[in-house]
Length: 307
Image 1 (tube, helix red, strand yellow):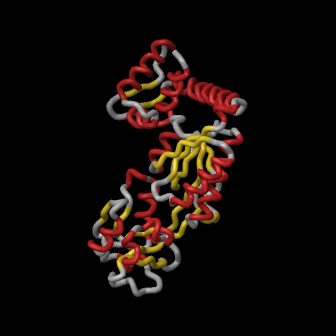
Image 2: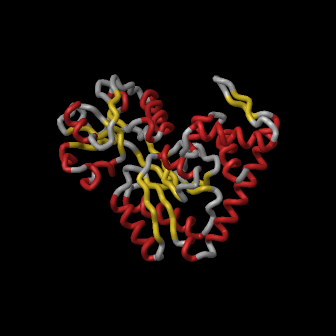
């Protein structure tokens, strides 16, 4: 029995779902079930009552959970504190960025790190992927779209982007100065796949419905957005920065961005680290990312709706 057994137990106890816990730990479910069985055998107690419908903690599991969490937190804090004293280890950082991060943000961030003689491992990943990697200890810092589960994570202040409508220049609404959400009813919606950021996806569609836009068809795409907007007479909901030539590609001149009346749609993001990563390099990394996002990608500080 070692600390990994505690990590496996905590993941299952917090999710009460072996499949979800396995995804969080970046492993398959059968080995996870085996590790939990080993822990229960070594302790001589059942930690979970489980059947085909649900998983619940036993009284022994409820007793163990806060102690296991405290144990892991103390271990991670001890490792981080010691690594901060070792120059070779303290000067490396693993960072995740959202898929739509601009080249300017990445360039400023990497230049700043090089000036500090820090080696960075940068990973392009969705909010869902970054969340899993942060909890698994495979990322030190990430950039997550709201909403997300904050358990085990520290989040910076929130940054905001106001969404408008991106449409083809020949779209019937292209000459309007502003557009009401309800006026999009006849147009298909082109948006990102739900698995990229499930919470954001659900919030976006709920806000559209509230504003009177219930898309008759929803298409999912990331790289082919411009082409589909031109060929399908669809609309997509993005911040104005999405039509910058360096972001929208060669077809950007065939598209226009229009503000939505009353600014009903916004995206929120935070720079996130694991709660146990409190060393000065990690904290400085968070600040550098925030500065780059505000300077280059039009993210702005505003009071957030999210905790």
